[in-house]
Image (cartoon, rainbow, N blue to C red; front, side):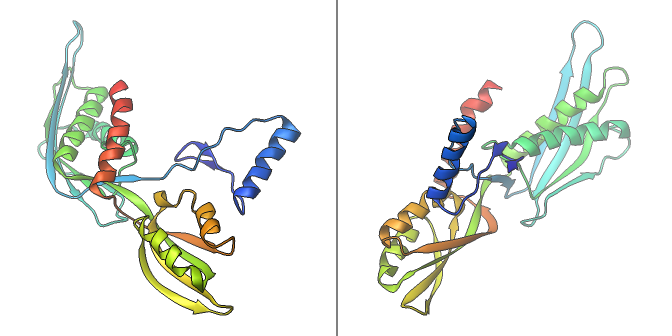
Length: 259
């Protein structure tokens, strides 16, 4: 299937072996060499504080110029709140026909992020003032002003990167509980409980960052002599630790600087 968010084609299988067999069949039957890598993690960005932002876009190139100025403030929404754009402009300081352009500039940041290049969510943007020019104000100027004002506010609003957290259940023979629990703890997992089931098996329940589960099938197979299995479902998003956010931001910065 095609993942529109990461622009990848995703192949799913029952195990690593199943995936390797599928890839070999593609090569043998169609002559297709497929380059693979682990699925990209669908991080998100948000803000944790309130802040104000401002930008004046002014450009003069001999003929008609460009002018647009935007004042806005931002605040976090509850997790899952999405995005809210609010017009509180009074007195026509930003004419109504240019407000969609301001929102367009804001949405450009929402789609590409400001910290690590991931979509932003759970934020309210309130545009409350600005300035225009009777001749030089045009859509492109207010798109730029809205985008830069939003970025200005984000930088002051304690931006955060959010990561997907999965509900994980691991089932294995009881004698492997120590190895399983220790392995999960090393993956920033929060173990919520264990249950004994028939056949001398246990079920370990935990919440774990999805980014930490790369290669877990092979790891579980190794520590349980092939007798362990697991199931997972998406649970929620939550902020990454500071050191993880710094690493993601540093990886994004060289690409961002090239744009």
